[in-house]
Length: 364
Image 1: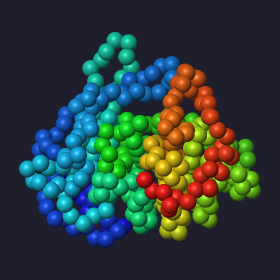
Image 2: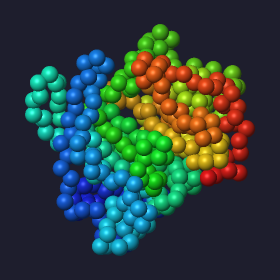
Image 3: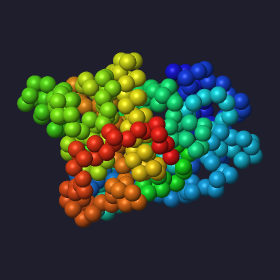
Image 4: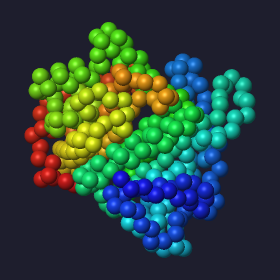
């Protein structure tokens, strides 16, 4: 992996990554020379026991720009700058121009009845490719592998700040999940606390290890390999599986087959296998109904607060939003109101459908 760091005209950081040395073919641009004033706030939800983010400046963020202006494509016309420079590189990471969290968030004005504080954290955009029509699953194998290295590198960079306790890379894909820029990209949120989902996972995984004397992932992989019902594809050091407790119809997990807390803990061979499993899983989801599957993808790593987390199961979770051709998975009353998911199909049947596909034959 090659990496070069730059500063944009409005002061935001830009890092370019490549499988070959990075070369610029122009100036580092920014859509505006002036920074956006961000004063995000966190407010405590006393019933749910979690923080809620407020970032009023995001109302003015880029929304469905015309095809001739793609802010995530390399700049071609210096008079109409985008976020990225022209040049030779494969991926780019830059500070979000409209962040939900910032490291220097000021304390908010007191409001009666509100427990609030500054929205401290960091938000980055990860551009997967210079090709505006591409997809993460459609990237060449070496670029999918590069993305794992980029995620690992950004986790280390962000986690080195003592204010950051958790780092979440993710990708939203498709207008169905609210995407407003179609250029293949994801985001990274870095929090100054451990979010509820990760906190609950840590609690349950720690209890399992204490009870059984080994990480949950060991038993999970062993059990799924023995069952031969839900594994979509086994790559040896990594595999894809529709978990037996899947909440979404074609929910797919991609994970290493030995316990690890972070991407950087994986060997070169394990990262190769994980990248292959991820690419295969995404292509199968696209091939399932012959359309680009809308989904949410998250990279679940342990907290970055400096503690050891031998119980943590590193994994990539993919939540597809189509449950059948043309039919969306919407969260209903039991899911929104009680947190109890209802799935229309057993994981064994969903896994069999995904296994039966040839992802190379259909790539929307």
